[in-house]
Image (cartoon, rainbow, N blue to C red; front, side):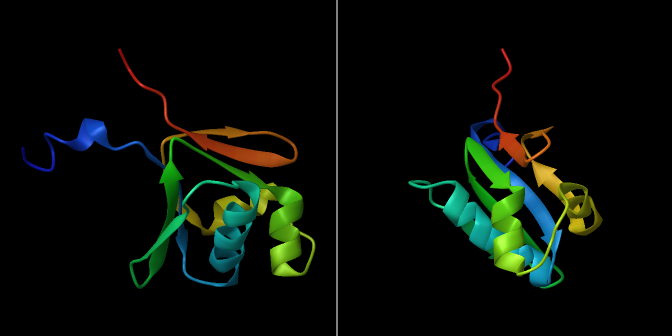
Length: 102
């Protein structure tokens, strides 16, 4: 099978972000907010892909704690170039998730 033939088997979700303090804080927050999940960070030089399987939650207060300063979730959009999976944004957290199509 080629890469395209296997694309439907990929169930990784999460943000693709510009390198920097916010990306590091999001990675650290992802580890705390998703206990029991293996969080991966792929360094692509100018950006990083932060991902896990099936579902990732990022809480505003956890990102604030990792940054060491106030943070609003809409600020995530500035450094988030893309994302994998589907996204649900609520007042206090963002959820990336995988949904199968039938």
